[in-house]
Image 1 (cartoon, rainbow, N blue to C red):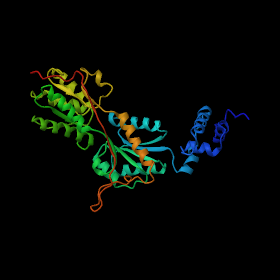
Image 2: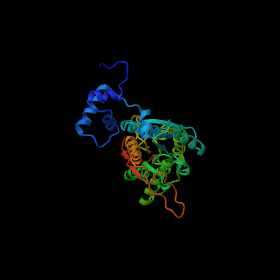
Image 3: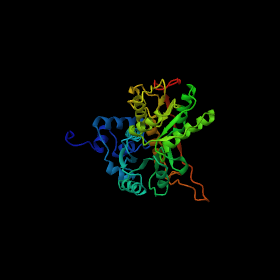
Image 4: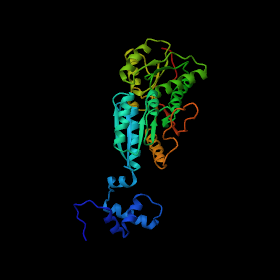
Length: 354
């Protein structure tokens, strides 16, 4: 019997080529332990040779799994959220899962509830939420969760499973680097005050200055854009005691460097500038930007791994984790921290008088 070349292969075709029963093919597809290694290899070879793809709808009826994960994200025009989403997408694909992505226009409770409901209607197996603000994390704990939820860059204190880059350490690495170069203190252009990443980077900067006995200048605030960096850079250019600036992301650092250049202040000879994120363009700034690299691929892998660990359990103990109700403590939710790395380039140097 010759298979119709215009028909997609089905499980019976795999069974026939491998010389096994339909049930054995099903066991291999569902990773059942009671299959001999040589039989499993034969079935897998037949699957690959035929180009067989399982019928996800039929499988979902049996296993109640759809092999689809949901992701809720916000403002993918920003490098950090966009790169985090890319890391999650690659990790999910490597694990054999499809993604259903909801990008929120506004970080409101209503929009978050609508996104969760949208993904629930699609019967996703689990959800990753990229959480930039503490209010979103708190709102998430107050909403019913029918499937496991993992947050990325969220707040570990609210009781949700979380994977994040150690932003506090990143802020400390930058500040320590500039102090070691001989700068008396370091000014800081922070991100929006309600962003968790901005808060942690600012905390790392401030605590490092305090530990070193260095003056702590009042922080400036931007909105992550080069334009806000430029406007704050104009302010910094008018402060003759400024010799080093830690900028909370590379886009704002670009604006700061431009403003200093227009004020005829040389970087790094007169003012050192350090960014955060290590965007692909940062090494082509003039001068090349010292910055902090975040391993977004590792963040994606860890987030998907946490979700798959939860799916392996009938009822993971942290699935409904949330704030304690007073008498009962919140269940312990896993937290995975990814370390950042300082990337030293030519935008930072020992101070020289203006």
